[in-house]
Image (cartoon, rainbow, N blue to C red; front, side, top):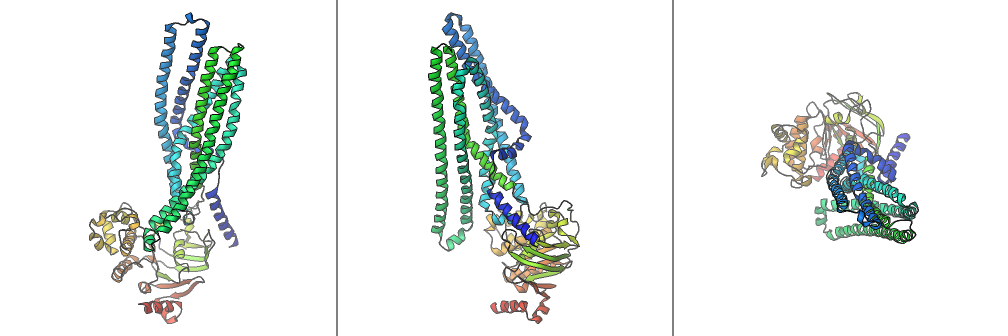
Length: 603
């Protein structure tokens, strides 16, 4: 038991560390690069086009150098034919440049968008496999921000990152080689500025990265605040707390503004530094180049070539600097994406898991202990319980006694801390999650309807079912009549979370899903709690029909709904303290009798 507790503590610490983990640039790029594998053909062609545009740009200084030097040496040697030929060559290169640029702007961006789509797909797929514990401790607004806003910048990053650095590398190498061939000394003087500029820019980049990380996190907090307030708008209005919600929003919004101010401050320092080094490089070309020309170490055409190449280098550096903001945004987005991907999957299929075929529905809890892995709140310890095939078992008890938790352990929404649960004699961990949960129908206490039509919400219980089967399931749940009374019948839009329907209507639609699914094991978690007496009676009859020959677990506070159960369990923090049918428990005059008498007194 102690070992299991330590393991759960480790899982919690692991989750917290994952949510706040910071990755090095090397780690981020190492995890991101494999996404290019599917599109390596597009990437290679994109880089080839980038090389073409770079070559076209670097040819111009050489043409200008040739024309200038020849004009100074012997102007008569230059003919219209020569100049025209060079002009035609340059025009042809520009055509190549335009075609290559078009491909880069089109297919390069499409490649980035596809990579973004792949990453969002992977993140969503991973989120589907994470346990309830992850969602209990992570705000939905933060999750939404990570798989939407944070990945928007990946498109630009995936396209421009290899492209811009590839172009910069080609320009730096070719420019250095050409200029060093003219004058190595002058070239070394000019290029001495580059390492110094890179060091200063890298330091500022690290600060920008930290600011962008805070900015992304605060966007998630802001999204979570907005979502929480808007989804609870009825409560806000009921308590006239609009001003309080506005102040909360203004606080988070102001924090976001402060972070953006800091970000722009670093960006301003970054751009100012670049401009300063730009001027320094131009100054070196002007002064050192002029001195070299006076002393005859370089020719006037060489100085023109130097100036054009330095202009090209500075323009390239500026593009890299301008891309630096996008680069940092992209890395931050990738980092927050990886924080999702590195979140531990606590509930998973065992290596030897098999498909669960037909099941009799015999469920046994053997010395089961459970505590929530995030806060280590102990729910029960050494619990033993046998539920026979086709038996209707009801669970009652005070709030917080573990009734819902006990039922959540059967479909493995959580895993037991100790002991085991068997189904037909086999540990439920030996079955795949999909087949195990596919054999269990659940009507939860907190009914959730998806934004869509009534038909879409019912057919969710068995995708692919015919409309007639959906209607039959609704009839058995006592929902068909009220559905047909609506303007659009089964095609009625229910609104987000079913806001257009009453609590009882939502509950009956939820029950209809279980009828359609037709599983061998049924869990009813306060399934009739939101129904009026007439609807409760109709649904109880339908549930009685459905439960025939099926293992049924019912959690209820309304004791009238479980009087006909084969067995009633009274579950408290101490475990199962009473067990028997209704008449036996009434005769015992224990806790169940007290619940029953209290319920009658409140009628």
